[in-house]
Length: 355
Image (cartoon, rainbow, N blue to C red; front, side):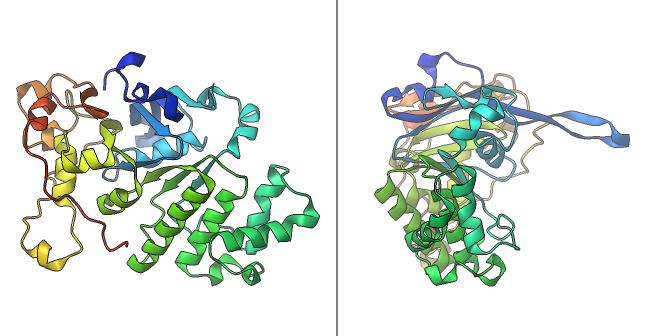
């Protein structure tokens, strides 16, 4: 994706509502090669611009290897940023020193996919949930157990559990603890990386309902990462689609599900299973052909063109810019205008059993 001026970026569409702005962000690193030598640079995130609106949920979707998790980790400083800006509270947090970022860290928290490995198995829940209060100096030690009890109640767990260890909990309970830990310092943004993908379908619904309720009561914004288009359709207010380190489409949720304006988004929707067996039997499911290319050697031109059913010669030579095609609807496809002229889709992926 070519670098663009501020007037031509999706993050410039509604600047008055922006809480977190990602501007031309790049996260490159070198993977180990043969005989101890470093290999070619991996362009995990390669020129991403996005906006998270205040009180909104931005759903980020794409196949494995698209760069979603690397992008998420870079926002909370778990991955170093190569270039670009992350504007939060009027400051570029990507350019901050670690010391300067420390007071900002409490305002942007992360919930991880692996609920067990993200918790210290030797800690009790009281230890785990008290830690943010201690690190950020938010409560005296005499009040810690009361604060922990309040957090547990907030996420639907009993305060009587606080002396248990995470290994004694179910997957859904552990994820509630992870959410509680993220809530402890009072964040404005929670980055949720596949927070329900490792859970049973019925438990997924409970966690999604909890997150939605917390957002409503506390006014937080979510960056919600998932490969499940049905889940994203349920929770997101806006959707961004990533492919091979770049955003290829972004729009309000209803617009992108009614009329996707990038062939990759359409392919994801066609490949997504539906929860209703009767409707699934009558639908031709179309897996996306081929594999995601390596981020260290992306194809020339449009990165999706080797797998795209609509590819034409220009797609293999010219990289399409992310451009505004319809109100608040951006697409990085040479032929997005043609897609915009097609009829609105009647269906789209439904919520996959998650509520």
